[in-house]
Structure formats: C-alpha cells, structure tokens
Length: 467
Image 1 (spheres, rainbow, N blue to C red):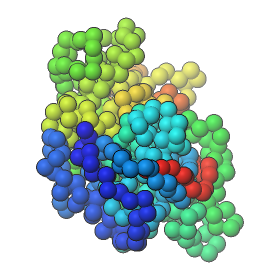
Image 2: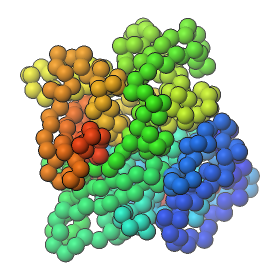
Image 3: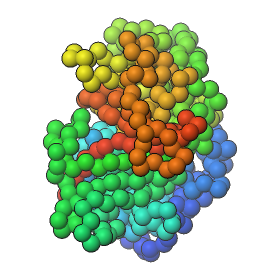
C-alpha cells in the first residue's frame, strides 16, 4: 500500500463538476489534505508537513479502480517535450476539483493502469522521463502569473508521486501558459518573463521566453542542449531562492558532508556487508543525496546492474531518513521520487583544454540511471558546489584545478542590490554538459540558479482513457 489508503479513489466519478476555484486555495487544499492524512502516513515525519507552507506533500499514492464497468473519459491536454522530458500538460480546470481525485485519471491516461511497465494502453513511453504530468492554472498570488503542480506517474506501478518537482517539465510551463492563453504578452513584446509558482515545493521560477512576430512562443531557434538532437528557442529558467524546497533547510541534517552507514539492503538479494559512504544531503529545488563515488564499497564494474541499482537505492533510503523525510528505510523505499540520488565523480579531462567541466554526475530516477541529468539536480548540484564543505566541492577539487578556477565569477547585472556575484558551473553527464549560473548575495548564500532549456508542443487535443 502506498502513502494513502487504497480505497481513496474508489468513489471518483467520471464527470466531476469542474469549478474554477482559486489556484491559491487549491494549493492550500493539497497541503491540507496531506496534513489531514498524517495519521496514515506510515512513518513520514510530520514536522515537515509545515502548516504555514502551501506545498504538495503527498507521497506515492496507490490507485485502486472501481469494480463496476469502466467509464470512458476524454481529457483536453497538450503533449510537450520540455527539456529532456516529455509530459502531459493539463489546464487545472479540466481535472476534478480535489487533487486527491486526479490519480486514476492520470494513471489511466499515461498507461500505468494494471502496473503496466510498457504503458501500452496510454500515451506514456515506459520511462520515468516520459511519464510525467504538469497541471497548470492562472495564479491568484500577487507574485506569480501561473501556478503549476508536478505529478510523476509511476512506470510499472499503479500509482502517482507528487513529492518534489521536475525542472525539465517546468521549462515547458511558461510556453504552455502562453500558447494556452493563460498569460498574455504586451503589444510588440519579443521577450517575455513568466513568474511561475510550484505548489509541490512552495518555490518560484521566472522563465524568459522568446516570442515571434505574432506574439506566440517561438519554438524554433539555434539553442542546442544535450539530450535533445534538434535545436530550439532558448528558455531561461531562473530558480529563485532554491534552498529548503521541501525540508525548509539547505542542509536538512545540519551538515555539509557526512558519512552514512548502510547496514542492510532488503533489495540486494546477494547480500552485502555494512559499508560507509560519504554524502551531502542537500535540499535546493529538490532534495538530493549526492554520493562521493570514490567512497563506494566496490567498483561498479564488478557487480551486475541490478545489484548496483539496489546499492544506490539503499543509500538513497538511508539519506531520506537522515534528512528527516522518512522515519525508516522501509518507509523511504515506498517513495522513490524523493529524495533523489546521484553519484559524483571528478570532472573529465577536456581533450582540447577548453570547456573544462566542474564535475561529472550519474543521477538516478525512480530506481534506474537517468539518461542525462535532472534540471533540479543541476540546480541542487550547482548550489552544493558553492559550499566548500560539500562532497561536490571535494570531488571537484580532486581534479587538476580547484573549483574556484573551474567556475567563472562575474558581477550579475540583473541581480538585486543584495546580490554581488555570479558563478557559472559546467556539469558533465551522459549526454553532454549543462551550464548553471548561480547568483550569490553578499553573505555567499545562493539567491538564484539559472539554466537554459528548450521546449515544444508535440500535439494538442484530447487523450481518451477509461477509469
């Protein structure tokens, strides 16, 4: 059973009354629901269900389906490629009023109903990076234009996860909002800023988009990003004040670096002796467990992939407990989306002496290696690189150059008066290099992280499914 009782969705009607409630109240409702469910959270620490924050704190929700004949549903939507992910973008008014009622609709639309790992009966692609949903609405907040909620639909499991957020999918929120008429450009405007509030993490993003002569989002362009073969129009995503997205603290355990003892791994059938690893437990844009790969107990090449994945998952679960996100490793194993986990390596040596990366990373998504790197992971890792006590800074400094020389430091022209410098970090991953610009205030605290992506519509219309 997941985070909520399995009969939670049993009374969901196909045709719900869709009233346009305040998106601010909707975000509050998401938080209130999880607060009310605190007695069935199976060990999740209630001190992180903070009443005065409007957050999506739901974990993996197991979905059950009614015994009566299935009902046919049609959901207006847009299927988009955003960054290196694909997601179903939905106007919130087209979903049931309560977020608790979204589960069966989204699981069926994406194709995970019946625990199908291929998602053959839906539009999902059978991968965690193509099984995502963005729920978007006009914001009632004075500091935001748009509210959005991220939903990860599990692959091979009849469940959804609303913890954390997705940076890649967020890069499509601004373009979707403009193309759907949720925001309007000013006459003659060719560049547009959209202020976006994420309900999952109670955080703000400002997206800067290019517009065509007609005022629509300019999808085509010359910006190339690793993991996407075709160039597109650059979307600059500035994550404001990324620290403490879910825990309220940049370093939830109170340490920039620490040793985790991994005592046992219930998923590793071959058995393993207890071992220690060095990690940084950090919460910026999303909670992450960053592992110093040099402290792993045995070389990866000497183990089958399934064993390596199980070891990484066991470290992630121990990290979740140490961060206060779960009461024990068994509870942590039920919510694979939060915290996320990544192995850190010294940067690769540039063949031409140019374009030296700051660090190299292999991240994981829902228990499997990520094909590139999560955008929120890039934000989180770049934030960690600004603190000398983290494993990120240590691993980066093991190369021929120190971290300070691997990043460029310049005044930030558009920064607020309290911001005094900007650092650029280049993070190497399986598909290439991602650059992150971090803005620091006079105390050396990270105020924003900016990353560029591309996004475009793949189709607009209706998705047909049964619940």
